[in-house]
Length: 312
Image 1 (cartoon, rainbow, N blue to C red):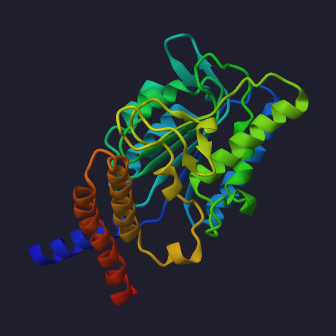
Image 2 (image 1 turned 45 degrees about the horizontal axis):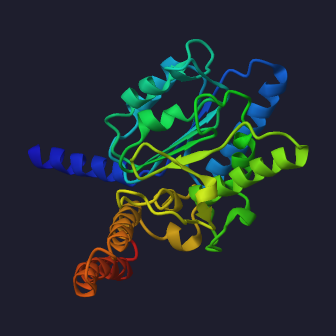
């Protein structure tokens, strides 16, 4: 009996670990029919992307259902949980909220509901006044995108529409690897948003931020050239964008052949290598390569193990 229970437990954890990604679309209160039509269009685009990427799709529009859904999600899966917030936001100088049908969702509430989640998280707040969500939600193994750089940017944000289109747009594949990363979609969408204001002769009222190095600061898109940040962080931490470039809702053929746990291990090693490179100037050449070699060997062994066990 004990042996049988152990087998069932092992199988259960295996299924959880290898479950696919989950995309949760949080549909905000539109306020008007015009916004309602836009929000539905963008939500439908994300839903189509989830289907193409074979991700589990969930949609919610109120706090109670969202909390119940998050409580039921695996906390330690190797596959990412994507939260896409489409709607309006508010900020009263202290508290940032996302407008829902019924009570609104504050950044602090969402942070509390996600505090036990150790799986990769992509939290995409496309609303106005969304920047404070970075301060509340930033953390290890998390990518936070916001449409604004402060809570004071309270006008309707257009990033959501461009991001919904970019996530499946081959033109957003900036590094030409046959898949669009979250970073690439974000940079493409932010560029198209800026072009909208320029072409309309309007003053831009939204400036998107990305945070994925857990420093709570966020990085604006004008710090990027291509997919790389051109400025160094003051404290030697990894620049934002590296983790976001590892997340893809729709995987290319090569990535599809890698199990989620192998991808997760590879991503961790790649980030360690990137972290080491930020310290290269502080280390002597000999010490740098001494630290680099074991990481590269681990990376090579990971791919060798996959080749030896193609069905793993």
